[in-house]
Image (cartoon, rainbow, N blue to C red; front, side, top):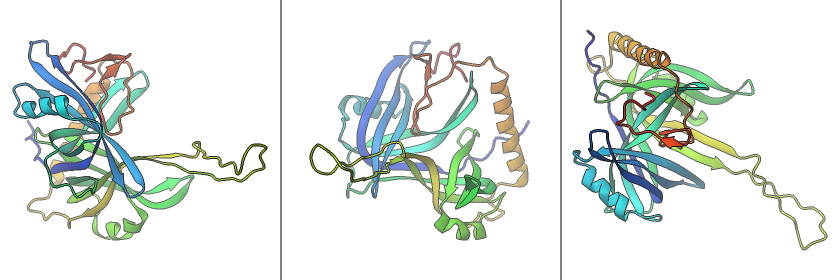
Length: 295
């Protein structure tokens, strides 16, 4: 039997303004209370406004439960908040096939912090790089690099990191340092925003003044993990070995194959913004009702 894979660093910190608190207390089939749902936070980054959903799932017996009761009862839209979290993933098989996407899962919330007014949505993640390729758009290189990588949580679960990208300005120095198979701690900026393209056009009008058309049809939706920095690759004494990397790939293939062989579930709502998706035909899954779980 293979050994459990070593845990890798996976820390997220979000500072922003509460947009929505959607938490509820439910009961498992065994009668145990738990809190689940999400808190949505607005995070400003220059002229960009990110909307990030942070998943919440906590049993009454866990130490975070009392703090989450306070979040549910007292946190309001407009509150400034700092959230410690981690990157995770959800996957399922639906009528439209296999789906896999990353989520942000909460560890703690606080409104009691030294707030300088600066927002952030940053992750420090140790990862193993498994592939690099040039990003193409309309068969033309954008200058960005698409990165394939994974991390491993405390339980040994392999978490593939989707939508990892290195911007054009950092592409060359990144390529000079990192390559397939290395282990490194990276700094990630979490992006989930809309680029609104405004088109101003003066035209003759029989009304008043200048007509300005603000077009929404050209909007671009940006949803990715942007690599903005990193340490030098880990040395052989702490880096994942080729055997561990091979085991991680086998573990992921087995998890996916097991899921694919199960009876397909109906499609979920996947409008996540790095958020929660526990819906089937408009009905919510109980994460502790294993008879209804899609995964």
